[in-house]
Amino acid sequence: MSALYLLLAAALAGMALVGLFRAADLLRRVLALNVLASAIFLLLVALARTTEGIDPLPHAMVLTGIVVAVSTTAAVLALTVQAQERRRHREEEP
Amino acid sequence: MSALALAFDLLLVAALLWLAWQALFDAHRFSAVAHFMVFGLVMSLAWVRLDALDIALAEAAIGAGVTGALLLAALGRLPAKAGHAPAWRRAQRPLVWAAVATVVSATLALAWVAWQLPRPGLAGPVAEVLPHSGVDHAVTAVLLNLRAWDTLLEITVMLAAVCLVWSLGPALSPYAPATALPGLPALTRLLHPLFVLVPAYLLWRGSHAPGGAFPAGAVLGAGGVLMVLAGAVHWVHDARRQPLLRLLLAAGVLLFLAVGLAGLGLAGTFLALPDALAGPLILAVEVAAALSIALMLMAFYLYGEPGR
Image (cartoon, rainbow over all chains, first blue to last red; front, side):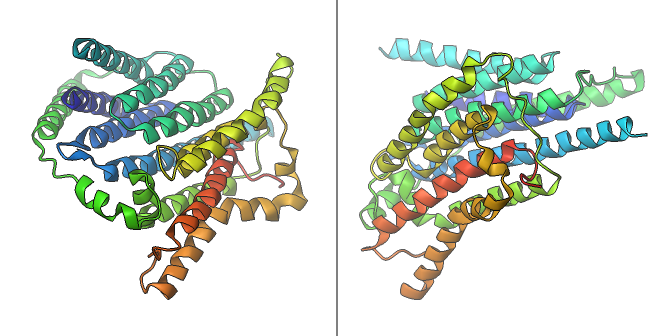
């Protein structure tokens, strides 16, 4: 069963890479980055199912990764939004 | 039963592929963001199928909830025109096909490698040291005792991201839906006790079953974002409360560092927990980390420094 999810992870990673390079819009790049992160998490968790049982180490790494991914998303979105706010102020003032 | 499970897995995989396609290539930005949020929710079902309940809880609250709220808030502030990529020029075509071929072969290589990869796994060694770690749940033991270093650095990364977001300018006032639907803020306030009860339960559960600081912090943070939207957390913008807010934001990192240094003094290794004290120390660090994670998720949503 985990083989199915491994293939899904590879397909999602490919799609996200195309989306990441193709997008001109910053918001779409953030989306693509998040999908790519999900694909890598899926790969790690699917590989954690070993014959001896479930390996908890990749699970802990993915939990850490989810929080780092949301931090990156927030930082990039804040940069985008604040740049837009400044541009608007500059256009309104003169 | 296994045929039914296989059918469910196939359905889940097809749904995830379609949702990811829509999130990446839909012409409308709002639709792309909405599909991404649903992608996060369906993804948490996939985590359940892969026996990763901790991740399912965190993904449902962070991946679908908080990331979705951040994206929607950013979407409302960005100009409506969607930035379309310009059409390819004739001279660019061979390069585009070369890039597509590279991505396709990289995808196939990834699938092949993942299929072939040996899986030694650390399930055995972790199970051996579990009785000495102070908790009964393997993932919590790895996160807060065996590989506590990763978790400490991760909370530090999050704090650094908060500093970056806050350094950009004053907080932007959220677009409160209060004017359109007066019932929503009231409902948010009524439901908020549940958003406190669920993390408390998850935190207590974390020592012996899926749960712990990350899902707890994520759910508490999602509730906090709702409260920001309902305009119910004025104290965050109060200039006199800023030292308290900053102390709470840093509480997780500070307590973690204190425990690590205490380990250096008691056991001779940074972040080494003595067997007898491991249980209570992990619980204390978890409470502080969950509170800090929740507040940091809320702090992201302000898109700038409050009280300035």
